[in-house]
Image 1 (cartoon, rainbow, N blue to C red):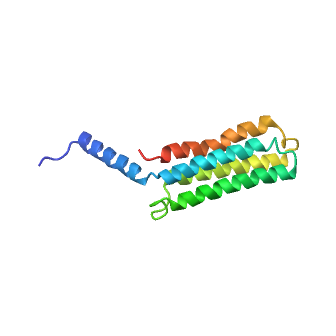
Image 2: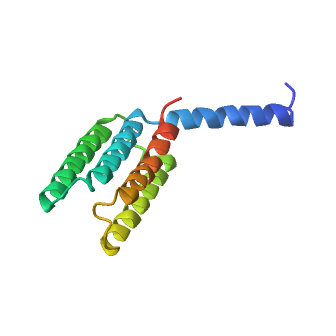
Amino acid sequence: MTAPTPESAAALLAEADAARVRDGASPAASAFLVTLGCASAGFSLAQPLAGSERGVGAAATVFALAVLGATAALLGGRGTTRAGFSPRFGLAMGLWGAVLAVGLAVRLTVPGLAHDWSWWAPLAVAVAAPCLVGAWRERPR
Protein backbone atom coordinates (compact mmCIF):
# COMPACT_ATOMS: atom_id res chain seq x y z
CA MET A 1 0.00 0.00 0.00
CA THR A 2 1.35 3.40 -0.91
CA ALA A 3 1.22 6.53 1.19
CA PRO A 4 -1.56 8.96 0.25
CA THR A 5 -0.63 12.10 -1.57
CA PRO A 6 -1.35 15.44 0.09
CA GLU A 7 -4.22 16.00 -2.36
CA SER A 8 -5.86 12.65 -1.67
CA ALA A 9 -5.41 13.08 2.09
CA ALA A 10 -7.03 16.52 1.91
CA ALA A 11 -9.94 15.07 -0.10
CA LEU A 12 -10.45 12.28 2.45
CA LEU A 13 -10.39 14.77 5.34
CA ALA A 14 -12.89 17.02 3.57
CA GLU A 15 -15.18 14.05 2.97
CA ALA A 16 -14.96 13.00 6.62
CA ASP A 17 -15.68 16.57 7.75
CA ALA A 18 -18.71 16.79 5.45
CA ALA A 19 -20.02 13.51 6.89
CA ARG A 20 -19.56 14.87 10.42
CA VAL A 21 -21.56 18.00 9.53
CA ARG A 22 -24.35 15.87 8.05
CA ASP A 23 -24.40 13.65 11.14
CA GLY A 24 -24.55 16.68 13.45
CA ALA A 25 -27.48 18.26 11.58
CA SER A 26 -30.90 18.03 13.09
CA PRO A 27 -34.25 18.46 11.36
CA ALA A 28 -35.83 19.15 14.76
CA ALA A 29 -33.37 21.96 15.49
CA SER A 30 -33.89 23.36 12.01
CA ALA A 31 -37.67 23.33 12.46
CA PHE A 32 -37.30 25.01 15.86
CA LEU A 33 -35.20 27.80 14.37
CA VAL A 34 -37.69 28.37 11.54
CA THR A 35 -40.55 28.55 14.03
CA LEU A 36 -38.63 30.88 16.34
CA GLY A 37 -37.66 33.17 13.46
CA CYS A 38 -41.18 33.37 12.08
CA ALA A 39 -42.74 33.83 15.53
CA SER A 40 -40.23 36.59 16.36
CA ALA A 41 -40.94 38.39 13.10
CA GLY A 42 -44.69 38.08 13.70
CA PHE A 43 -44.29 39.42 17.22
CA SER A 44 -42.31 42.40 15.91
CA LEU A 45 -44.82 43.11 13.15
CA ALA A 46 -47.73 42.92 15.59
CA GLN A 47 -46.33 45.68 17.80
CA PRO A 48 -47.37 48.65 15.63
CA LEU A 49 -50.87 47.18 15.37
CA ALA A 50 -51.27 46.61 19.10
CA GLY A 51 -52.97 49.78 20.26
CA SER A 52 -53.20 48.80 23.89
CA GLU A 53 -51.65 46.65 26.56
CA ARG A 54 -54.12 43.89 25.67
CA GLY A 55 -52.85 43.86 22.09
CA VAL A 56 -49.23 43.62 23.18
CA GLY A 57 -50.20 40.90 25.66
CA ALA A 58 -52.00 38.95 22.94
CA ALA A 59 -48.97 39.19 20.64
CA ALA A 60 -46.69 38.05 23.48
CA THR A 61 -49.02 35.13 24.28
CA VAL A 62 -49.06 33.93 20.68
CA PHE A 63 -45.27 34.27 20.52
CA ALA A 64 -44.81 32.33 23.77
CA LEU A 65 -47.15 29.53 22.66
CA ALA A 66 -45.33 29.20 19.33
CA VAL A 67 -41.95 29.00 21.07
CA LEU A 68 -43.26 26.50 23.65
CA GLY A 69 -44.67 24.32 20.88
CA ALA A 70 -41.41 24.49 18.94
CA THR A 71 -39.47 23.64 22.11
CA ALA A 72 -41.66 20.59 22.72
CA ALA A 73 -41.04 19.48 19.13
CA LEU A 74 -37.31 20.10 19.49
CA LEU A 75 -37.04 18.10 22.68
CA GLY A 76 -39.07 15.33 21.07
CA GLY A 77 -36.55 15.15 18.20
CA ARG A 78 -34.55 11.98 18.66
CA GLY A 79 -30.82 12.42 19.08
CA THR A 80 -30.99 16.18 19.43
CA THR A 81 -30.38 16.57 23.13
CA ARG A 82 -28.43 13.38 23.79
CA ALA A 83 -25.22 14.75 22.31
CA GLY A 84 -26.02 18.42 22.85
CA PHE A 85 -26.71 21.06 20.25
CA SER A 86 -24.43 21.91 17.38
CA PRO A 87 -22.32 25.07 17.38
CA ARG A 88 -24.43 26.28 14.42
CA PHE A 89 -27.57 26.08 16.58
CA GLY A 90 -25.89 27.87 19.48
CA LEU A 91 -24.63 30.65 17.23
CA ALA A 92 -28.08 31.16 15.70
CA MET A 93 -29.71 31.29 19.14
CA GLY A 94 -27.09 33.70 20.47
CA LEU A 95 -27.45 36.08 17.53
CA TRP A 96 -31.25 35.92 17.75
CA GLY A 97 -31.18 36.75 21.45
CA ALA A 98 -28.76 39.64 20.95
CA VAL A 99 -30.77 41.20 18.11
CA LEU A 100 -34.05 40.80 19.98
CA ALA A 101 -32.62 42.25 23.20
CA VAL A 102 -31.10 45.27 21.46
CA GLY A 103 -34.28 45.86 19.45
CA LEU A 104 -36.55 45.74 22.48
CA ALA A 105 -34.16 47.86 24.57
CA VAL A 106 -34.09 50.56 21.90
CA ARG A 107 -37.88 50.40 21.60
CA LEU A 108 -38.30 50.83 25.36
CA THR A 109 -35.85 53.73 25.66
CA VAL A 110 -36.67 55.79 22.54
CA PRO A 111 -40.04 57.55 22.71
CA GLY A 112 -42.34 57.29 19.72
CA LEU A 113 -41.30 53.85 18.44
CA ALA A 114 -44.31 51.96 19.79
CA HIS A 115 -46.37 52.31 16.59
CA ASP A 116 -43.62 53.19 14.10
CA TRP A 117 -43.52 50.74 11.17
CA SER A 118 -40.15 52.11 10.09
CA TRP A 119 -38.70 50.61 13.29
CA TRP A 120 -40.64 47.35 13.62
CA ALA A 121 -40.51 46.13 9.99
CA PRO A 122 -36.68 46.15 9.74
CA LEU A 123 -36.48 44.73 13.27
CA ALA A 124 -38.74 41.85 12.20
CA VAL A 125 -36.34 41.00 9.37
CA ALA A 126 -33.28 41.42 11.61
CA VAL A 127 -34.74 39.21 14.34
CA ALA A 128 -35.80 36.45 11.94
CA ALA A 129 -32.56 36.42 9.92
CA PRO A 130 -30.26 34.62 12.42
CA CYS A 131 -32.87 31.90 12.96
CA LEU A 132 -33.63 31.36 9.29
CA VAL A 133 -29.95 31.32 8.30
CA GLY A 134 -29.24 28.99 11.22
CA ALA A 135 -32.08 26.69 10.16
CA TRP A 136 -30.71 26.56 6.62
CA ARG A 137 -27.24 25.71 7.93
CA GLU A 138 -28.64 23.19 10.45
CA ARG A 139 -30.73 21.23 7.98
CA PRO A 140 -29.57 17.70 7.16
CA ARG A 141 -27.78 17.41 3.84
